[in-house]
Length: 358
View 1 (cartoon, rainbow, N blue to C red):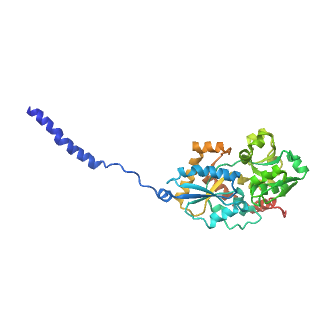
View 2: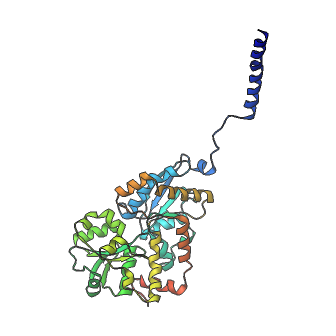
């Protein structure tokens, strides 16, 4: 029995000693310390400043993004949309540049014209430099169109060059304003342009009421989300598409591209500078000077949101197109545009002007 007793003593003496060594050498795991970005955004609210009126295409995109972006940002802040229309989004752009906190707590959703206008617009002293914003990315780098309501006698681009067609338009800097004048000045269209509408929804209502016949520089994706029944019931004549590359659906419908009517190489350079703004068609940005780690976190969150199944499903439900590009690419395009040759910039500014001095 002695050997049995000794055998029992070994584990009684050895195991507690061994376990004591193990416990000392392997501390209990602990949660990772929150990053500085987490600490900043936890329990925070981010304002999404939308530089357009409620209900339009830009508003629909921004609100859909706002519903999902926060869960991909460290700290999971709430994202609350706030409309700040005015001057083709230039009011919102100036606010973000000069007044908004430079800490990543406010994000802008601007018309591309607000980014282009200080480069080529009639009033270039807008009080902000678009090349210095921090770009998170764009949800769509799509196609713009010219279209008339079914009651208009202008059905084709040739019709637009042969008869006067009344178009509704926004203020200078907006796509519906600048593209209409570009076409008049570069392709010989005879558009009578009624400017000053607050947004595309107001122009669409004016088309239905017979106040105007159509509009140009309108996003194809917006038509599909705002008036899908027009397309379904053939109440709209889409007679031109404007993009760096043709849209396959519109091409299949027989809609010609702008480049069919602008073939001179020098003129095409000018038009391409204007059309390049469609690369950042639905862009989101932050004021200059926010901390680099927060800018990176917001860029990463933006791209993560674009592949989030719940966001994609909501976008499909809202009938909005998604063709996202990352913030680094958008930043590069904006900076390249602002480094364009002075003569090309000057010609571009003239062709979108109501009274060109060419």
